[in-house]
Length: 210
Image (cartoon, rainbow, N blue to C red; front, side):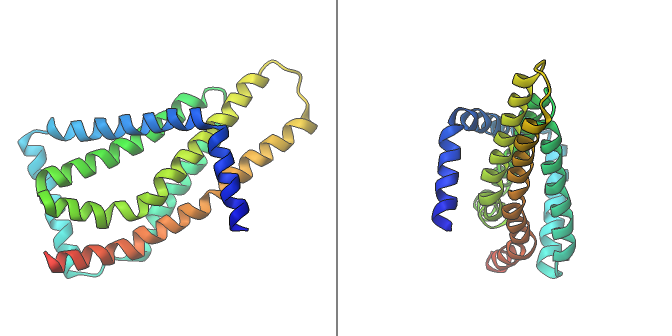
């Protein structure tokens, strides 16, 4: 079964390689923009963010994080992103907005990583490795796959625009599009679980060490 899944994934990426490159470019632009934004922050803004993070680290080190609440909020955010891209995919104007969403995700990650490393040095790097990297190893590839699937269907909508409607033929691509997109909710669920229940443990261990 795993062999078939692996084959389908590889075949999907090969068939949509150009789209994946474009989506990856949008994500990297977002990361670069986020990292560059860190250097443009004023001293006051940096002090406020450092104070917020110091308070967060203090709470994390002295109190138990409500993992259930973190899981719920992260799950809601991921469902909203998935649902939004699904909706955008069935419109003819969805492509640029999907690219923008992926770019924004990149911006958030780039800004967070850039700020932590820039202000906290090696300690910040360790927090990136324990607090940001684990769940994003799953979330980022899945987000790109969701974006590509959404863009693909949006392109199909553009191509079919103006053509005579054929419900018996159009139903199958739509169902396949919906099934493929929401199937990716499974790895997102796994990433959400890691973010809520595993990452805080790693971060608390790191705080004890440092």
